[in-house]
Image 1 (cartoon, rainbow, N blue to C red):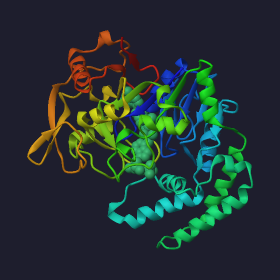
Image 2 (image 1 turned 120 degrees about the vertical axis):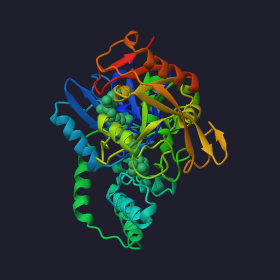
Image 3 (image 1 turned 180 degrees about the horizontal axis):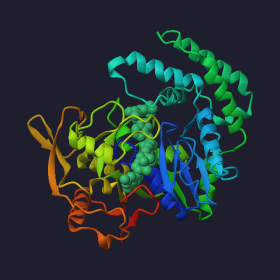
Amino acid sequence: MKVDVLLGLQWGDEGKGKVVDVLTPNYDAVTRFQGGPNAGHTLEFEGQKYVLRSIPSGIFQGGKVNIIGNGVVLDPALFKIEVEQLEASGHDLHGRLLISRKAHLILPTHRLLDAAYEQAKGKGKIGTTGKGIGPTYTDKTSRNGLRVGDIEDNFDAKYKAAIDRHKEILSHYDFHYDLEPIEKEWLAGLEKLKQFKFVDSEHLINNMLADGKSVLAEGAQGTMLDVDFGSYPFVTSSNTICAGACTGLGVAPRRIGEVFGIFKAYCTRVGSGPFPTELEDQTGETLRSLGHEFGAVTGRPRRCGWVDLVALKYAVTINGVSQLIMMKSDVLDGFDTVKACVAYEVGDRQTDELPFEISGVKPVYKEFKGWKTDMTKMTSESQFPKEFSDYIAFIEKFLGVPVKIVSVGPDREQTIVRK
Ligand code: GDP
Ligand code: IMO
Ligand code: MG
């Protein structure tokens, strides 16, 4: 069997959590392969809303194995809060949630370093989620990181050495902090984490595939936040693209099956960095308020704009997307006209190929007639208004990949699978 990958094609928050939950019944296991608690994946069903950060979004469909893979960075303190919230709502994760020994630990000082680096950048700050993601991945690549497997062997000494090293770095910054309370929470989190099963997930996953079991890999963030291919340096510190599932799980490229590329019918971004189709006007405000575009993790207002087909085409290519999933089309239900960016003006030329630098490019739009129909209760594509079908058909043709799922609301049920 193969690993199917579901990943974001924009700047994150496309609705990955919702769709992973919907697709989970088709799989034996769901895994996260990169990122950490910078993610906030929202799911809604039976009148309840849940936000997951490190735990895979397959956790609500009983009987499935959920795995936090080696490519993930894990903060025990935030993990404890997440687990306890789920337990309080009647979801016991023990036995269903497995954690890779090779996943890296976000230490309390990683969070402080994240804040110190952002402060030092001043106006040029990335606008990170402040969860210590960058410093943890930096320690991983500079071979200074601590992994979940380290908890099982002489952890205290390794932890102390790492914290002392971080304190030394922090002493070079004009940054004031109080480590004690966050360290206390972190150590309590560590005790919670120890109640879960640590596994050599690369063996587990490959053995599952060899036994004919199916696996869904759940991306975090989005392609335009990828450390190599995103809007660098305004990106996250991991490979959010399909290739990240290979390194973040230990599966070979030829083991990748379907690649589900998920995007909003418009576009959003949180934090700093270029966003060619951003609307800083009333239309942008309308998208934000109708789409409830406020960060699931930080509560920050998300920047909003029209869908960017130039960036989406790039994302489709880099990821080898085989099926598209369009989210939040209901947010556009009331618009008289809807726009999609089909090219960038760069200096005196037009291109539909994403350039090295996207700040300063001018979007070229195609305008579509709005469908002016409430689609939130629709259950089949036969009910789609003609204008909406035209909008989708244009996107499919432009990107060369079929849109297989359309989401018309946040609930699990508001999902239309196309033939
Ligand atoms: P993720 O990080 O990719 O999982 O996405 P987030 O959970 O951060 O953001 C997506 C937001 O849109 C959440 O609040 C979802 O409940 C909501 N949502 C998902 N799909 C739809 C949809 O089709 N329509 C509407 N209106 N909201 C949606
Ligand atoms: P999900 O999985 C949207 C953004 C931050 C910042 C940049 C770097 O919910 O789609 P980091 O804390 O990773 O160092 O921040 O990346 N960012 C996200 N934006 N959705 C996310 O995750 C994000 N995770 C990080 O806002 O601009
Ligand atoms: Mg999110």
